[in-house]
Length: 153
Image (cartoon, rainbow, N blue to C red; front, side):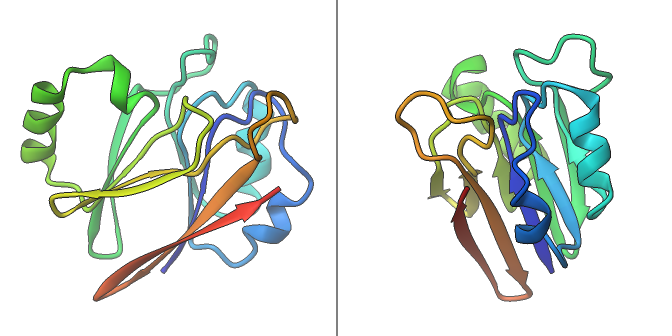
């Protein structure tokens, strides 16, 4: 299974994204979508699961989504590091036991394994600002491995 991972679009969908996400089975958006038209455009590529970011007032999205893709449980939440103290996140992870946590907000790509859980921030996909690279990610989910591929925009 191939999953497109994007976050922090802030109302802008880079024209490269449809080509980069061609053939994905699902798209996960880590919040700060910016405008509903972004989700509509992504849905033309593959089914989308998105969460509410701190700049997404007016969008009918939930703060957290838990879903199963293939054989794995995914938890999608916009601000992983800041909203909840580590003890609360530990309890959440024990309850849900996700294989993967997708998040955004920091605008910095991150791939980190904590215990048996992969934490993945695809980076910032909105219009160029700051000095941060713009990126999305592909998550290749084979039965015995997860492999992340960061793609520059």
